[in-house]
Image (spheres, rainbow, N blue to C red):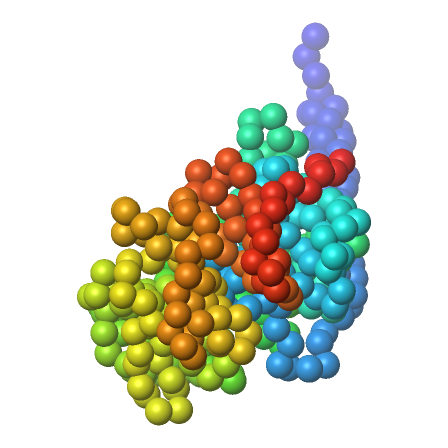
Length: 357
C-alpha cells in the first residue's frame, strides 16, 4: 500500500511534536535538578557557624606533627581509635564515656566549637569496612561534634591541616600538581594556593612557619594571607613545631637531634645529643617527650629543658606522641598496642577504648 504525502507529513509532524515534548521534559528535569542543587548548596552554607574569634585553633602544632590523632575542644577529647581502624571517637577528659562519632579513618583532627575538621583516609580501611563504599575515600571534611552534618571540603588526599579562625591551612594533593599548601574557608569556599611546594604549615601569631621541601630545608615564614616567604633560619631541618615563643625541629645535619629556635633572640639550641624519631612538648616548653632512635637506646625519654636532665621512661619503639592536658598518648611503632601516661606520676597504662557501633 502506498502512503500519501499528506499522511507522511502528518507522521512527521507527530514525531516532531513528540520530540519537542521529550526535549521540554528533559529541560524541565535539568532545571529541577539544578534548583535542588542550588537549594542544597544555599542551605549548607547558610547553616555554617563561623567563629567569632579569628584566633580560634583546633589542635597544637606538636600533636599535628604526630598525625593529629588526638585533639581537645572544651571538656571533650576527640581521637582516632587505633582499635577501630582509626575511626573518629570522643571521650571526656577523665578518659571515660567513650563514643564513636564517625566511621572514617581519621587523622589531623582539629576541633573547636560546633565542628571537627579532619582528613579522611578510608583507602586505609580494611576490605570489610563500610567506609570503603563512601562517595570518596579521601579528602578534607567537616563534621558536627555530634557526628551529624558531614561536609566534604576537598575530595583528594589532604594532610597537615591547621584550623585558624574561619580558615583551614592544609597540604593538598593534586594528581597534576602534586602536594601544595592551600587555604580554604570552613564553609568550603575560596580554596586558595599559598605555596607551590607541599610544606607542612605551623601557625603562630598569624604567621605560617615551615621547613623547605623542594629547593632547601631552611626554616621559612609566610603570612597567613599569602605573599612572599622569607627565611627565618638556614639549615637542614624537618619535624617543625611551635611552642611558647620557640620553634622546635630536628636537625638532619646532626643525625636528627632535637633543636629549639628562640624566635625573640634567634638563638638555636641543641636539646638532645642522640637521634630521635618524634617528639612532643608541654605547653610551657618546660618538658619534652621524645623517641630515641639510635638503634641501641631506643625508647621513650623525657627532657627537663631547664636542667637538661634526660630520663628514659620506657624502652622500645614508639610513635604518635600526643599531649592532651595531663596525658601523653602513644603507640607501639608497629601499631600493635596503644598507651597513655599520666604526666603527673609518669605511670603508663594500656589505652584500649571500646569499639562503638
